[in-house]
Amino acid sequence: MAGSTHTVTNQAPPLTQYDVFTADRALTEAVERHLDPAVLDEGRSELSALGRTSGSAQVQEWGVLADANPPRLRSHDRYGHRIDEVDFHPAWHRLLGKGVSAGLTGAWGRPGGHVRRAAAFVVWTQVEAGTCCPLSMTHAAVPALRADPALAAEWEPRLASPVYDRGLRPAREKAGVLFGMAMTEKQGGSDVRANTTSARPLAEDGAYELTGHKWFCSAPMSDAFLVLAQAPGGLTCFLVPRVLADGSRNVFLLQRLKDKLGNRSNASAEVEFAGTWARRVGDEGRGVHTIIKMVAATRLDCVLGSAGLMRQAVAQAVHHCAHREAFGEKLVDQPLMRNVLADLALESEAATALALRLAAACDDGGEQERALLRIAVPAAKYWVTKRCAPLVVEAAECLGGNGYVEESGMPRLVRESPLNSVWEGAGNVQALDVLRVLRRDPGALDAYLREVGQARGADHRLDGAIRELLTGLADLEGVEGRARRLVERLALVLQGSLLVRYAPPQVADAFCAARLGGDGGASFGTLPHTLDLAAVVARARPEPA
Image 1 (tube, rainbow, N blue to C red):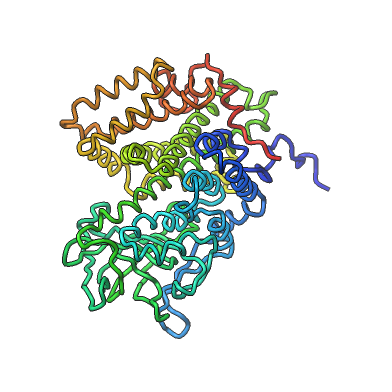
Image 2 (cartoon, one colour):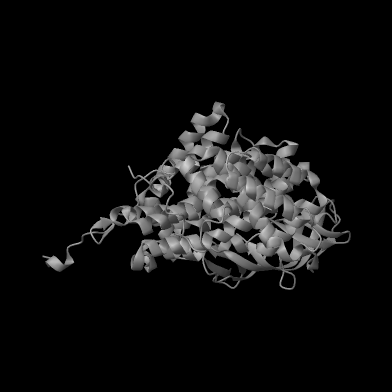
């Protein structure tokens, strides 16, 4: 019998067996706000089903197993034949199958598809973010493939399929396929115009032979990839299948898998092309123009993924503090901890509100919304993904020493938290993209100002921030050195406008005070003590069934 010193007391129960979707008020309200009433009930039902799956003990354990058993490269079979395959733990395949069946690759062809998928992506990220890479790439390949209607007609139904069909076989034999992407090279990184991979035209119309390398190939176990290479007419986008139509393996040499800080359940590879067959997508010399549509979609997924990580970190912190007692009082009821939790909750809700607003713009498809996306997506990608890491670290600290222990799950979130800021263009790339839009596309700034202007007059701090922003935008000469500050303000003003319009008054008031009014410190937990912080924390608390 255990001694009395081993009686377990004052420990929070596991945050499990709950609906991850319905327990997130900011997310559920965003879905209700942006989803057409005709499909709202259906959308809520499917998201709640995914939320219950995500919150189940079994699926959470799959996430732990997938992270603890990273993929392994098998370059050759037992006889010495080159096979270039990646082996994954069974938990990875189970999770990926759940994600595909939940519609995370099928947003483009159904009503409200982007909002429904965006909410699902936020939910699913909270299980194991590593599976989100192939789901994101497959989803994002669709707009790039549409540069070639024949290719889109052939491949899009396979990408949108709710069936996860494992194994490398010709695409026509599969019930569903996954896509990856390979853009960057050793010598260029984000400067893809420095790419040296060459594409030699073949006799078959639209067919080419690739020779070269890619320094980062996302999701190398996928069925096909979008790749940039130098054709006679300039940098061009290509579709590279892993298996050719006759059933033979395409030349796709996996040199090694990256040993990453986080995202360890997902494979990222270095790949060599040596006489690799490819099909051109779009015109020669228009590679960046073609693939940028894929990049824009994956950048939005970076925002969604960071919002999901932030939400899970906040949920764990609030849940722990609601059960843990110190000095005779629950942590959640102690003023200083309440301040920290409320500050974290504000950041999480602002990220969710912004991410779902951008998804709604994708569903709308009108010129005004497309213009808004051109400036708001890189601004959101810059800011939300940068706020993820400090938030997750602070949330882990709310658990004390427990948060530094692997079994809590918080270290896995900490390792994952910087990823979305780096992938699909790091911070400077996003800031410079915003500057390019501001200089070349007056319609995008007009769409942005119309959007934030809908909240004018509702909060004096927001009004002041808009005026300050307009002053900063008045002169774009020599702006590059202050681009990060400008883009940060663009994102914060947009978040403030959304919260003033849609969030409870306590949330909007606290956000505007701390983020726009200058009444907050440099670290989390420095909100004005006069605010209704208890209401902000209560709103963020997950409630297991």
